[in-house]
Length: 245
Image 1 (cartoon, rainbow, N blue to C red):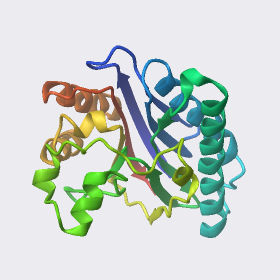
Image 2: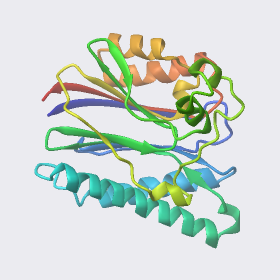
Image 3: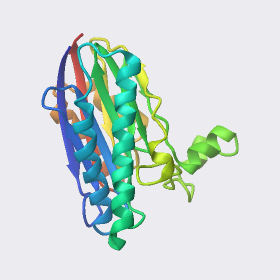
């Protein structure tokens, strides 16, 4: 599979950047995390995720692993990071209650494994149709699924940023149930923190992804659009173009 990748992470309107990302040098996997906890705690949590998860993912045979084996290693990696974040939070009072989201795209034997914990997202643009591949683990999303809140109401709901699952809580290591996507030539993926969708709606993201020629320029355009759209958070986006399968 031949991929082209671009990425950008900015502090935005925050004092420090609690987002983190990892782009595997061999284009086998891609990660985005959005830390929380205030001061330096969010940075530590997202940084720990970027330290432990890539190391554990190396246990995958990216050419031959079965879907079940790949899923197990991915979940083991997430569980390990969750444990380390919780443990350090208990040891250091300054880091108590820190946490982070995590979202991933892992390429194994021609299949993309996509998932995450929290409200960072993976989008796919295929045939000019944008699809969110991940599900937010937020209270507003739970209310939408329960039928007590509409997606339009959720945009400005007071609990829109409250998560019930993230790395750093007991539920964080409960498995990711990743989607399996067989990529097609021309597919475009976006992995991002909520700073992106906090300032750029689906129509904007779709237009930028569809019109992009270079993934780095496209990633920069998405971050700029989120900034121009009023995002109040750190903004991180990783853009992946599928050129050959």
